[in-house]
Amino acid sequence: MNSNPRQLQLVEEVRARQSTSVEQLAETLGVTLQTVRRDIQKLADAGLLVRFHGGVRVPSATVENLAHTQRQVLHAEGKMRIARAVAEAIPNGCSLILNIGTTTEAVAQALLQHKGLRVITNNLNVAAILSSNADCEVIVAGGVVRTRDRGIVGEAAVDFMRQFKVDIAVIGISAIEPDGSLRDFDLREVKVAQTIIGQSREVWLAADHSKFSRQAMVELARLNQIDRLFTDVQPSAPFDALLRDAEVQCTIAQ
Image (cartoon, rainbow, N blue to C red; front, side, top):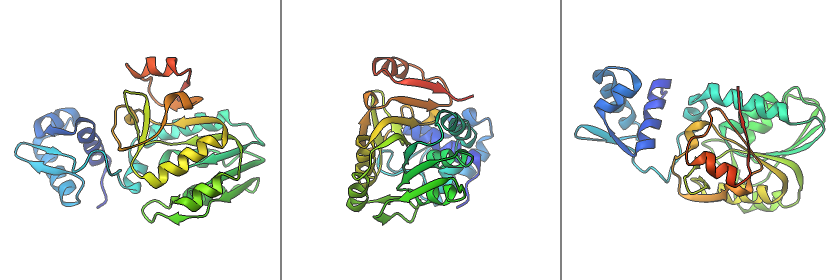
């Protein structure tokens, strides 16, 4: 289905709460009960939500991410601000790894005017974007291509990443939990991302505010493995204290 921004926000609200009532969704979204019920029906038909009497829940909150096309629209303005902030901090002439995710794809778009970059990626969307920059050398990992988002995963991608040591890794994430863990949904993707972290002199995390307190099944890293965080809203408790304790430099994109 082609979800509109309101429906995508509705899904994120339900995911954040695990389950909720129709009335609470209508109040949060500022729409009528009839509109919410209509949206829920469409989202349930698409398998994104499960209806029950008086409310709605996600089918499995920790095991499956939103579709790539849906994530591209969700919090798009915040992701663009984050991407610009990351690009402004990246100097010309450095080596990078960009991994899978719509935020890292936005970063790639923001790097089109940079010069002398060498970019390694396991994301075919990132490679396609940066191939438009004649002053950027793009190196693409081998492995299994996930058809849903053109990410490259698997042991071949892990082995490929082990060949390099780069200045900066810019990574995305699906969830940042209150225990300080960074989590994602696909074990194969996580194994590649863990290798990327180990092969990078600095690790920068690009994550919009919706990733805080979201849940996902597989632990990718801990906050103390991150050097810089780029986000769109000042993190609230307990994340502000966690970031200070982990000595993560936090940039709020304007």
